[in-house]
Image (tube, rainbow, N blue to C red; front, side, top):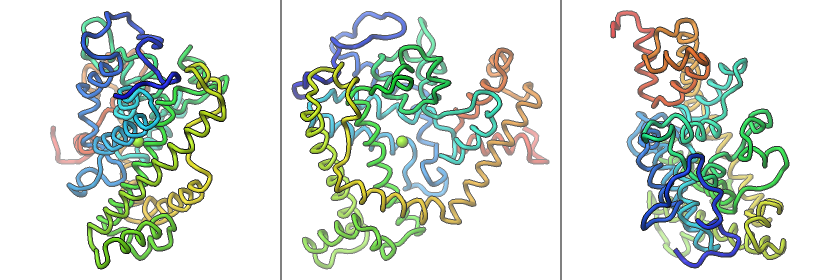
Length: 374
Ligand code: MG
């Protein structure tokens, strides 16, 4: 790690952990957070959770695990360029999707609908719940007991109602202040990662084509640059060379603009960062290019009929499971039955959110397929 900027998060400026612990030996507080996240159960489950394509549809598509690793890579790069805390940015990136349900956004929406009358379901809040409460790893406390700064970064969004329950951590959603720059950058690194890898996965799946992408200016321009440098290049290499240039362009546009914003706002300390408007941002030139790209992915990939057929099925599976457990909590595994006695709907949501895609499908079959007896 290079020298930290004065407005970066550092061990010395940490607001600490919920449960007091001795400082780590030979590693920083944020390295310890990162290590705990990598060793958690929820992290390993990300391998079998959908990003866009259901996990078993193909071996080469991104899962939430490979997505999270790409977000961590981009986050570290940006943090290093800006003199920010790389270990913290990496921790936030690796943990940012821990609370995601099976089946991607379709699963999250379905669970939120089921939970409407019971406080709702927000995946960012569920990620926080996972690291604060649900992981069972340590003798002295529930969860992973991460630092305030990692937890702050995990909670990207939060409704005002839920924020009000969270004390210090929820305060910024009520008073409109900002999290650390490391949290801000991990948030945009997430976007850079999925906007680019969804093009790659979309092409690989055959649901979108290179011809269609000619209508997306940022892709078309970078493809032209590749073809100029490598005349006649085609196939996977053409796609990868184009996408790596796009990632690079986005990272550089973001770091240049962010540096400018930091200087402009006269930010000198971490407190200044929290009080200033959001400082990590894309350049004005890049914003319309990103809007076009996102619009394309929404219309041509996320709303592709084959994807919608899958998400429709996913919604049904989540709703069926939720309703069956609500009707009879004795169908839950014993440890969740105990939790359900305190808060039935939340215990069921925790159980469902923790499932991998294939576990949810199997559980659905176990509960509903006539002729299956176990
Ligand atoms: Mg993500």
